[in-house]
Amino acid sequence: MSLEEKKQQVVEDFSVYDEWLDKYEYLIELGKGLEAFPEEKKTEERLIKGCQSRVWLDSEERDGRLYFTADSDAIITKGIISLLISVYSGCTKQEIAADDFGFVAEIGLKDNLSPTRANGLVSMIERIKEIAG
Image 1 (cartoon, rainbow, N blue to C red):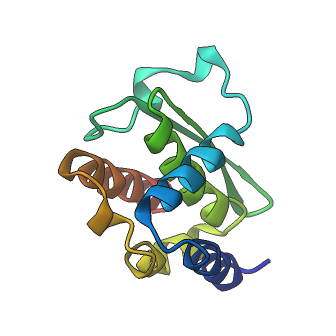
Image 2 (cartoon, one colour):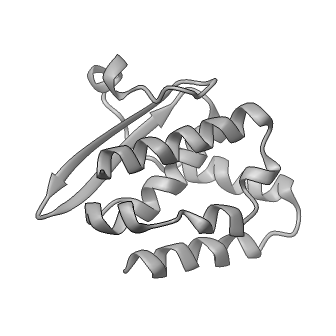
């Protein structure tokens, strides 16, 4: 699935829900689906700065594509990072660097988060772009 197709899928998935409470529930479910993140990878270098809760992001490059794994100690935040890595894992650095992450605004995520979570979201996006940079 291409990056554009993955972003469109997220927009469609979120459009199913009318209420933000339901969208939060969906985010929580996404977070529960994250693969286990090894304790030994929960290091300072992998910790995303600017998030109120703790979020770890790891990446590896295989065949010219980046693959991300992540974890968080907060359920909504875990869902947010899960959403981001589900879209950008498997993309090339060029695809990520050139992307505007506009689907995040399209689903209204940042506008419906508390200010601290919204700042964390921005920090997660910046870190993904930094890895791809």
